[in-house]
Length: 406
Image (cartoon, rainbow, N blue to C red; front, side, top):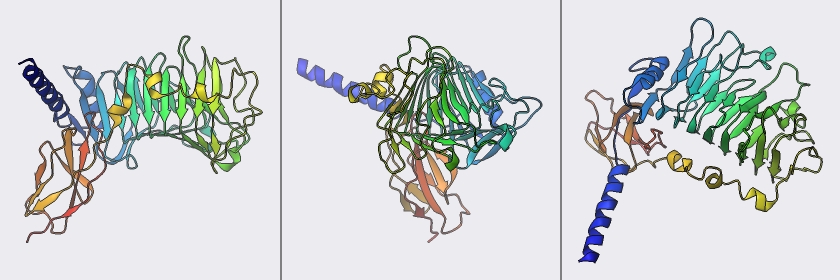
């Protein structure tokens, strides 16, 4: 009897877990169908129940944020997802008139815990010319946030492109970040996993570029971690840029197994206030040859990690009570079947909804594993499906099926 009862309890538990995974939903706000980008952010901020995730979908286009004075779009609500249709052609651009860390943000996350961003290009287009390289022009600004995730994002700017938040935690995966001086700066614990870091041209090519300027809080163990990242930029910066420089507090930055297609200076790190720790482990050049670290700045504490030390910089160790990779997991595409004007596929319990594409453009979102081709659709139209994970991020397209009227 006890064994039977245990089996029943296990069955109910598994069924409950499965149902939780299978929760279906539709996007709460679609840009531009329901309004512009600012209106989408306002809808997230003013919604009644902020304990539930609010998912914003942004269709492919360029969205220029214009207005008088400085441009700052502020998200204050937690549990918000902002998803672009495609990272390469879904761009949100701000055009601020004055420089400043708290003035120029294309997107400002202020207390917006558990924000999830995927497949967008954010650009701070402040005086986009060769002489504006040293102006504070922030693309993404975070303050007082914990548990944020960036997946397949592009952040474009000059100085201070990405300003991270004091005391916060952010996971950054498969992203592209471009800038000149200190283009990643601020506090908090931020893990950059498989990201592209790219220098943009400066007005004065004799100046040294710098990737990061951490301001890690006292008591923080990790600061910035760059794992398996790719570093590139103008060839005249080869051997001239710094990996980082100390800013405030107890700065920490570590580069692990990164490929540096252009190499930093021999010293590696800019001089200044002694950091808590700036270090590297087995980084390579563009030919995947280990970089020579013999001349790294000796004022740093242990600028080269041992293998045992490097093993401690895992995502699980950095975020012991949080698994961001489970959130970024993409749902694989289904196999489609078509019969007449009905397209169907097997339901995936991990999918939150399905995006239906006609000729590679999203035309509908559905929660059931089928779609009826509208009357009047041209014969030969190609249909495919992308699955959304529970955060709202869309995975790869399925193989296409071709609509025929016969």
